[in-house]
Length: 270
Image (cartoon, rainbow, N blue to C red; front, top):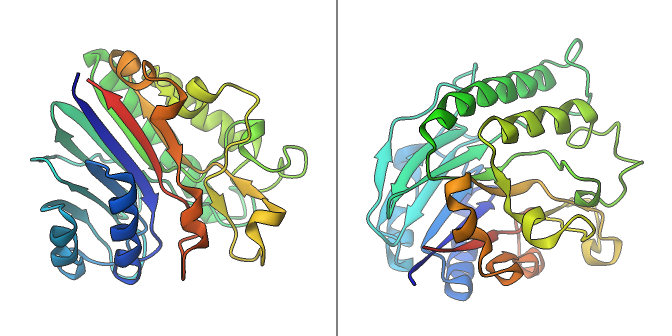
């Protein structure tokens, strides 16, 4: 049985942290890496460094100084048309196809600090992005497609996706309006949230820890903001190997000048 390992990582500046990606790639051996918040334009991406890592196939959707997503692959990769989801036309989404699997890479808006769309345009933008994404997946679901959707969704939907469910209910990333909006997105194409499908409801799973925590491990005030979802045709491929197929590489948070996010991998058995 063949397999395909897909990684997602908000790298928080790909030019600054390309060496960390190289270290991770050597350890995790992913076939495809989906990066978010690359913070560069297409011509500024470190293509040579990724080729040296063994990823000659690269698709970059960049933006000057902020946002941006990129997908790199060891295997031949077909670039697909983008989705018209972001009303601000920011670099937040892209699609590719690898070994017949459509991989969608997202960097959903963070939403600012105040969870009120009436007074916070950034939060209103986040909710608008979710609505457009829901409509897009509702259309795509009619095709019964083989899709893996990954990225920094900037929402921790489950009560065990945050260090304190009660204390974060009014904090952006875990408010009911966001978690309910993300659930509508998931349900639009009947996606399987791989982490919860494999780990169950009771396990605490975090992928992000604030830079403000001096000892992030000791405080462990994390959130699961980085996700991997699969459509129903890929359920068996994603889940048949069990919990070991899904990994949060949290030790990368201990590396020098790390991203505040940890990479996440899924091994698909095809």
